[in-house]
Image (cartoon, rainbow, N blue to C red):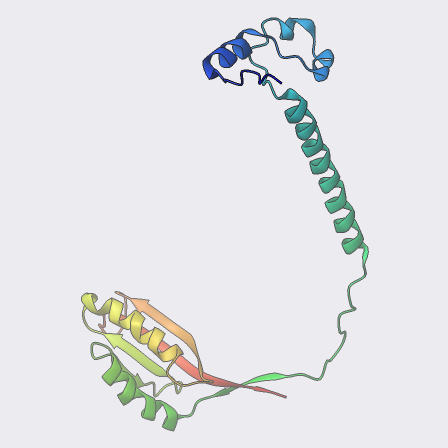
Length: 182
């Protein structure tokens, strides 16, 4: 038995593939002017073309499936909303003067550039700064107040910048409250 010469010459094969038109059963679907020369077609067209067609069909199937799922989900009736008085009431319990007097010195130590004072008129707290450079400190003080005591929320009732009646550069009036659910 004589062995055949199995020497592979890649340059010869590559040259032959470049010059030859691809031979594929899928080419009969293309118009003849596109096949003239046909160097633009891949040589593995028997694999590429069916895979591309299956990819397009799978995408179309996926779109129709998603559309059906959206239609089915949107057609389901949501749970009815509660009507009338549900019996739940949320009330604000504002802090008293003693709480503000307790909080003011501690917040003042945490934010030294900001003056904290109890508002005698409406029972809240007033934050003031005397210098424009301390404005970031004022914003930081407001941020500190939000996380100062757990369960206490703060409501800003007044804020003025550069046009404050007491000649402060900035003034913020706040009220603290706790929420009670009944």
